[in-house]
Image (spheres, rainbow, N blue to C red):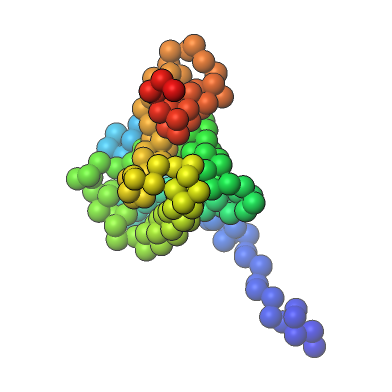
Length: 208
């Protein structure tokens, strides 16, 4: 008997594959609507309508609007982790940080970055109780924090700034309204907008 074959996981049934595909479509749609409208304005009805399913079918996958939005945020955290893992290890710490900020802004300009919940949002409370979200957030923060401290040590980032303040500043670029304002102005391409905001974020606006 082939023990390797015996140990192989069973292939999902057609029904299971269809359910997983539907669940992914729901999360992707919620992600898009969260980016376009934010959590407070997004409704379960429009998510279901966009996917082409009944609201009752959606609730079989996600019992509440908060659970649905949290799944989209977990998906974003996983995408972020995947990107961090793809950054070349031999790059300078400052270049790694610039690469992450560039990626986050490109995701936002593409309409794929969910808006962060308000401080008193029910979604924020749900996220604080979501182990999948919190675990990924901690791991992302640890990686970025290490790069920030390394960049401060080599003199490419201001060592007088608390690392946590730098971390939150970089996180903020993922939901920076400046990107939307510049895009609406129509004077720059997405690539030019990213370069402009990168310059103000890492180089500041004071004359050199």
